[in-house]
Length: 612
Image 1 (tube, rainbow, N blue to C red):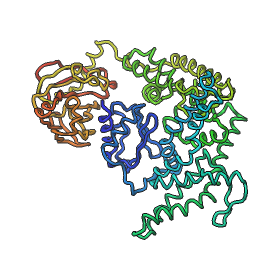
Image 2: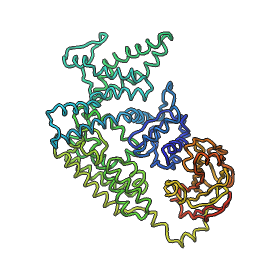
Image 3: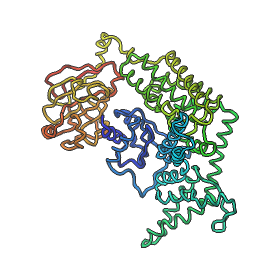
Image 4: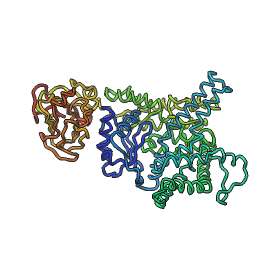
């Protein structure tokens, strides 16, 4: 399935592009806020090919896709504007949910910048260690300050990101963030002489690498800017609105919000450091054990301000880095154990790919595609993560800079203490071995073992579900369809028809789940629970609905043989597209088998295949 088809499928279960009020992404997840949450269908979006899983937390729909998430996001952006620039995004739910949504929305866009800086620092450490770069050279000096830039000017990045989240002017926000770092203010801090602003005392603080002062400043701006817009005379609004905004927000930030935010930030960092100094084993152990649950719900983002502040204050952090490194490796271990033990070829392929990806630091495919789905491997991951995290905590493992915890970014654990990276690798080794062994010992329900012999399939025919042909024409095997995704049965088993005309009919009695915006595909569920995808043509999504007419809509009830879609067969073929119609059982794994009725001439309602 193409990225465009994935985007269309996701939107069909989210109420369409017009229902999206806010949209962003992280390394593997598409994060959506909806105007009308009643239109959000989590179970439906999970059926979209390429979607690994979906959860809702704090009013945010998190759709797990994997590393291709940016490509899907770009396709969604092409489909129309998201939300309304003049409206505030609705914040629903309790205070905790709103705070989670806010933190996620602020930090998700700037994480790549932090990772870039962190990985550049790690690379510089390696270059210096292997004596490829002289620590006293100008090259070292240049790379070092480039790597530090994202952290040094973090107040500006946070201000811009917060402004976008709260629908403020991001450029005015950038100015307010930059004012905290201006060389003249830095000089006042260095001088240490008392400073007053409008007669009120200013606390002299170095705001470099701070987070919370910028968030509080732009939060205030989100209220001041609309007020400035309201009271500004229309003829001079272009001039007066930004002037009023910055004249109010800047003094309040320097006098009140800046010192308050700095105190909160340093307090959080001090609390984390206290735990690290006095009960160093506790946090890595808990993180190693419960990281899958935090990632599953998106709550791992709530630790971001503390982690960033810890970097700024102490130059390292032990809150999430050590435990998440172990947990990610354990996800990989469990998936690889499943891949070795399973007799199901499809699961072996998924588990192998997800296992390797998890070892490199991206765990969602492993968690949602393997361990959470099979459950018992997830228990092994949590136990192995706790054991590895305990070792890391007892030996004081810390992470020196940001980076996705995995083997691909192990250099983030290289720092002043040469044994830190050694203990980090021992901790993940412990977690890997324990998790792999426990996954093997605990076992899991292997679908290949429950299929039974052919004789069992034939005796189950009394519970058969007959799926009819969607069109008049020639029935062919699904494996003969000239589309690798359909022919390989990645989406599920089924059948196909080379149509005589452009009338596509319902293959069973049931309910329409969705009609793709391009009308080249319709999903439905039959009265027996079989979920069917009627896919018209190969790559016809590129026609963007041209030559297609839909006769049904979401939630319509249909009977076998009812007209679903009409298309101009001759026109579609004239543009170079194959018009073969495929019918896929997308929840194939919930049934014993899908048995084709045979090839040759067929017609609407005639059995195309039987589900048993």
